[in-house]
Image (cartoon, rainbow, N blue to C red; front, side, top):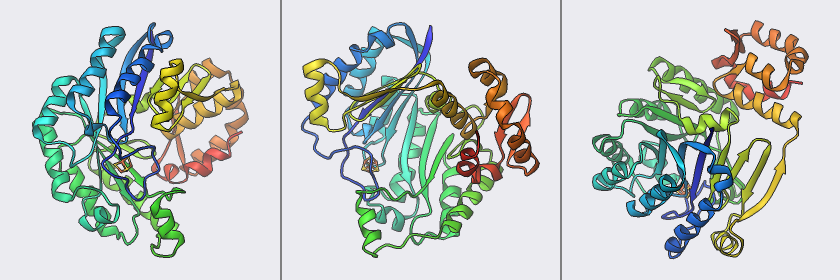
Amino acid sequence: MKEIAIYIHIPFCDHKCIYCDFYSITKTENVDLFIEVLKIEILGNSNYLGNSIITSIFFGGGTPSLLSVSKISEILEMLCNNFNVSRNAEITLETNPGTVNFQKLKDFKKAGINRLSIGVQSFNDNELKFLTRIHDKQLAIETIKNASDAGFENINLDLIFNLPRQTREIWELNIKTAIELPITHISTYSLILEKGTILNKLVMDGRVKLNEEDFDASLYELTIDFLSKNNFDQYEVSNFCKSGFECLHNLAYWQHKNYIGFGPSAHSFYENKRWWNFSGVKQYINRIKASGNAICSEEILSSRQLLDEYVMLALRSKGLELLNLENKFGKQWLNNNRSYINELIKNKFIIEKENFINFTPKGYLLCDEILLKFK
Ligand code: SF4
């Protein structure tokens, strides 16, 4: 049976954070109808799910933890009753401090959620205010401790670095605070200025000043160094974990495995085909009601596109397994790039070991530029 990963987009948020360009809305009056329609969409994909074993389910958003436990249970039960969900499936819920208390976390655990991804972003109250998050440092710490007490043994934190006015000391204190908590995984991203966000307007109007690129790179370097010294291994450009706690769902994306996304704006990938849904909740609901799907567009990837994506995703994460590459795509890529690879090895940007090539920490720093030069 083929392995498959499932992503479920829950588009509701308490409010819109100033930096966020994920598709989310703050009106929750359509929640019941949304869940009904979501179930129709999932059941309508039995051609993909029917012959597969589901190895991970990821509730992302938006803020899925805003939903009641019974709604999340309803979706999980429907999946388990109709499809083959692996007994060891990783089932993640994106959770925001301020939307869950100890009892709700305990109930999510009982409902089958076995991994939490907590949107902390910072442990500095000024930064949290700037980001317009609904929580403060104390609530973030309390939520993580509650999650652990509720029985969660696999907890990710999302953290953002290079915020305006952030110093090295503030960032170092953020990651130091994180590793002292009962967590297994850290996803950390540099602040990205997305068009259409309030933050973008503030920067354009000159009311917020961003840091220099060199400072961004120095914080990233500090992060890699600090986390690796504290037993958080880097297994992707932005992801670090304790041994054995890689996110299986993200690995499915990065290892080019099949995944199906449900809900507004969700993306899917199956063999050589990629497709994605309409973003608006109303449009999503109307489309599903009318035709059973809300596909906005799709593309068939050529073998060259598949090869380029495979190489890029593998190198950005756990490394490129050369034998696997050859079995899938032949020897051409390696022959074309052998001298460039040797140069990268000589300059300590990548290492080649036991049939794998991987970025070194120095290579991760420049990975986008390096990847562009492969032929
Ligand atoms: S809670 Fe997350 S998804 Fe919702 S607006 Fe804020 S950053 Fe975006």
